[in-house]
Length: 238
Image (cartoon, rainbow, N blue to C red; front, side, top):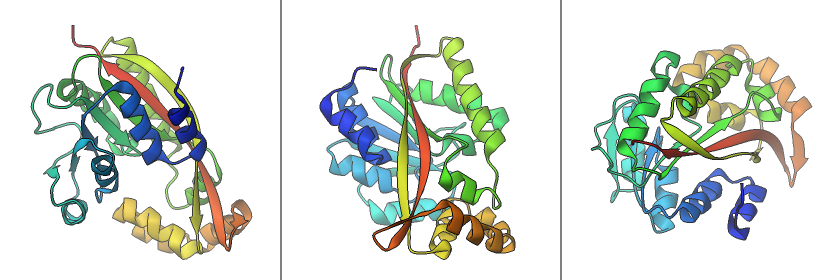
């Protein structure tokens, strides 16, 4: 994929928010829907960068946090497979580390909704973690997402083969996260999915050992690396 200097620099930084912002700028998008927005961090970043952004999430606590963080933005409750937004309402639709949380039997529905909501030939960006890297290895005792991450990739490929989208780009980059200790790492896993709480408590000793083995010291903290793949799709409706 040919990229401008700003987009190349974004990939080199490993910052997913920066990658998304620069990709959307390169694609010429203005209005953006963040699917699985969580606490609204990406929506806030998009608005700061000059986009008109909204978010959707099935978790009411996450939406409460998102509305507190970005009171001016529109946030709607609901899963990726059943959106309340109108046809062609957004220039772009983004999934950041959220698509693999959609039930496998509803992934096609979620992509169909993204296609419906997004405009013809404009981007649907899906950023998904790969089943590899020191971050992934450390979290595996809490939840091994190998199969669900693979299923997400298959669903995306199937949608491209069906002609729902054209594939504009497919790039892997590394996100580097730093933690003070294993407790901060586990807190982050639970924040993404509170259902992990019991498993995190049960497997804490194993995770702590992996954290020591897999992380690298970095300015007084501990760095873990998660490779991410960004799929740049363009909606095809004709």
